[in-house]
Image (cartoon, rainbow, N blue to C red; front, side, top):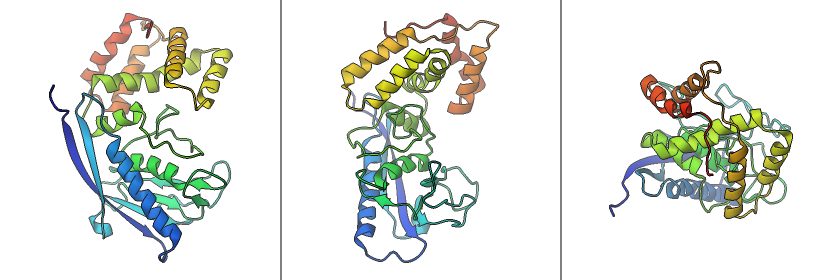
Length: 284
């Protein structure tokens, strides 16, 4: 058996704050969480039996030497997206600029966190768990968008509680490796299941199925085997539209491949042909 190939990508990060933070316990704790969060991304990129990116991060002494700058700030802090303080249910905790945000400029890959928030070192009690938010923001700094999978690190809604540091969802791993290694059939399937199928379930499913889906999402301690069985049942009842000339499904799928995954037109056209088989019967 041949060894798994990987592409090494080395990135530097640098933390800064508007004002003097000093050498407080919280400053040291934040620095530790930052280091562990980057280390987590370093260990969770591999997909078994597939070429995968190997991310290596190191702390840079100077901002000029960093690929990712981490800024703690309040209110108006020098970009077009001022923070809103502790806010309300629409509260913005942080924002991050994609690595390709500017052709020229200094914001690419930068992570900005609202310093007026009540940050905590874990997810217990009052306040916002810094580690939960920061691990998610690293994904954006690496070029990842949001995911529709609730178990994914890149799911857009903040999760209260202690972040599970066991393993990333396959959707996170595929998104990262798609960006840094390139397309693969496995990750195309994962994307189809994560992004396309849920749209059909949301559109077609009855209220009963929707309620069952929500119950499943809220049952966080459900065993892996039980989750898989539930997924099989849902997929068997999920309606995937037939690709006929009168419903434009094939064209919409081609458009998604081009817009979301940067497929060339001909490749998107080729990959969408399998939908012409009609209603797919998955995991029967």
